[in-house]
Image: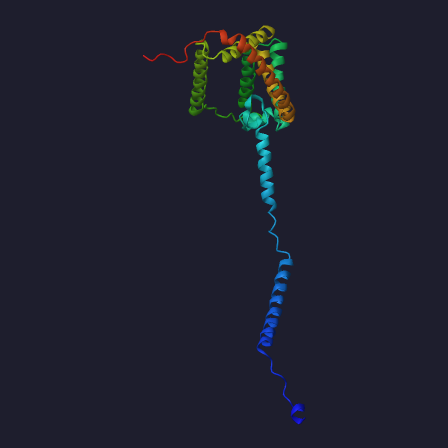
Length: 274
């Protein structure tokens, strides 16, 4: 009985030890799997947003590309200020300085009234102006010693040689180019240009029969002071109507070309080389 009461605990079998080890390992694996699941549930950091400058640059590029595709009269790709030559003449025509532009237009109007409406002649006007100016300066120079005033300071006017040479070269180039274009038209190589020149000359002849040369110059001067500024102000609207008109002109020209111009014999495309 004593032996039975003090008997030692029953030793674990081999299978029980293996089961205990598997249970411990399974608990570790479960914890690791839970941690992996938690990591997957956590939100991943999102990519940094694209900078606003890139969007602004792409929008500006798209706007510039769309603006470049807009129809412009006469295929113009530059601002109207640059088309007019830029600098001070373009500033005058576009009324950048209202006082100067108004003064120039007012002076041209006064000259036109003087010669056209009052019947003053150019040679008479120049001679009378020189007589008045020279007489006034002569009297001032001689009377300055009596009235205790300084004599007039008359600037020395010298025309630079470079200016005259540049003007002569530019004039020569334009005249030669005009002769070359007239020669091409006379040879019958470009019927479209021929019709444009004929229409322009006919329009000038009509204007010449209605007014003299001075009035025609004044009309051109007034047009240069009014049309560019109006076109710059309403550029988009004018170009929209111009595109519609240009499309219609091209349709009519295609019909005219098919019925008339295609039947007209043309000159040789190239000159014969000797």
